[in-house]
Image 1 (cartoon, rainbow, N blue to C red):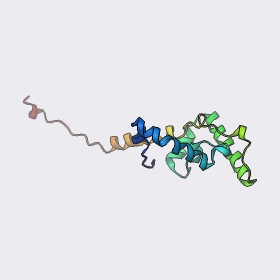
Image 2: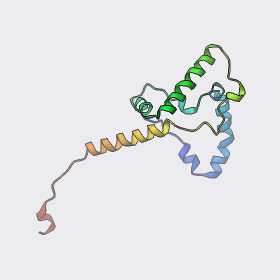
Image 3: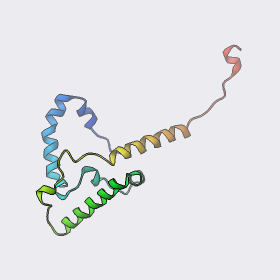
Image 4: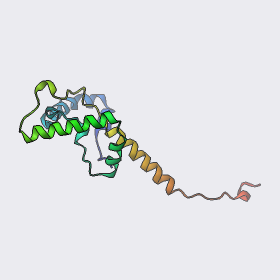
Length: 130
């Protein structure tokens, strides 16, 4: 399951979003994952059944691009180097691709759980006055 987040609360209030934007930009730059050529969704741990299912549902090109980014970042980490600045992921390129699928799967799981726990009761015809 996804961790609780204040992001929806902040994004619903433009003045608060405007106030937090510089802090968010600073944090993304300080995290350093973009300098290794990674997107934020590449950092999602894969040890979860939901994430494993989401990875299986990715289009082949997106799955290939993810593996390429992870391998390239691993190689940079082993060699203790960052990518050349031209190869860094730009903020506009850092779009969610996996978290969207994870949210869909979580919604499906919740709907399935709701349907499985539903109790069907036969209506009493006499109660309506028939």
